[in-house]
Image (cartoon, rainbow, N blue to C red; front, side, top):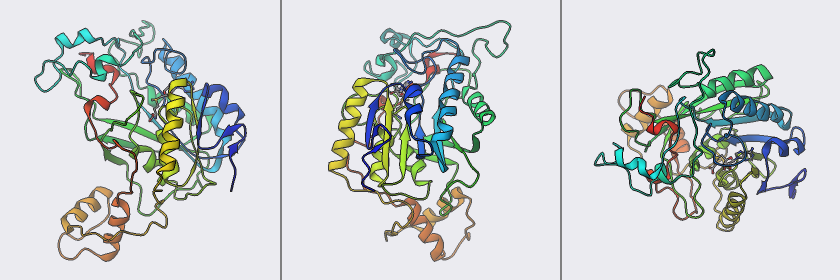
Length: 366
Ligand SMILES: C[S@@+](CC[C@H](N)C(=O)[O-])C[C@H]1O[C@@H](n2cnc3c(N)ncnc32)[C@H](O)[C@@H]1O
């Protein structure tokens, strides 16, 4: 293609700015796959999305932002949103909270440098409105659901929900509600005839750990595996395929896109993150060993135990004989789906609790 920009935005780089404004300058029908994770409600310190006191404003702001993306996505395109819910409780973790914490291996608090204590955090209050029953103390606010319903009203087609089951979830101490060990990823399209990989089928439960990378800390990164799977589900790749993230953060969607051979455009409001993610993209590019897209990826021969393949097939909802030989076709599908593509970044994949997003409700004993 040889194209180096998309409208006014450089390809394969992150542009600094507020997505709510920048999106308007994207060319119409120019994006193939959007993969993004907006900030949690009430956790940010500075400007941008997520600082709204009233959770309704947060949802409305996101709805407007995604509404303005509708015409920017190609008819074949996809939009994946990884978004967390929030409890209507205060968020005000400080280092001193360690003194009464029941978290950690000895139930005496996590390490003092754990992001639970040191993550710079907005001092969010519960947002109570007596005449509005859902804005009551302790309510899980259902912010993702509210967003999904609003987006459907705006014309987005809701095409599914994936549960990311965290292999190393953040421990949550003592609380009278289920500890959260998953996050949701919602899939949207403009048109029912959008592009999508059908074989092997994309399952609705994904399991992988969070991870830590070198360089400038970003306290709410998603692991590379998340955008990688979302992008692969598009079923096609190439320089002409444009991946986009309006909340680019440390640039993880960009790294996944480039490794899959796609082009990338990212927007990010925090200048330090813009610089760090552009460095990350450049250094990954120079050491690039592209991950091949699912389509056309040659199966890599390696021994796999029948029991492993059976367990995988059952998880995928694929029929499999209880005993005896694994059919060749099933073995091939297993290899295609589970072959781990090479990664080049030092330090990635080393999951540690410190790298995890700290859920806002972590300290709320409700
Ligand atoms: C949850 S993080 C995204 C992390 C990213 N997925 C990664 O793996 O690094 C959300 C990011 O959105 C940025 N942000 C918040 N409001 C924004 C806005 N209105 N426009 C652009 N970026 C914004 C924040 O600075 C933050 O880095």
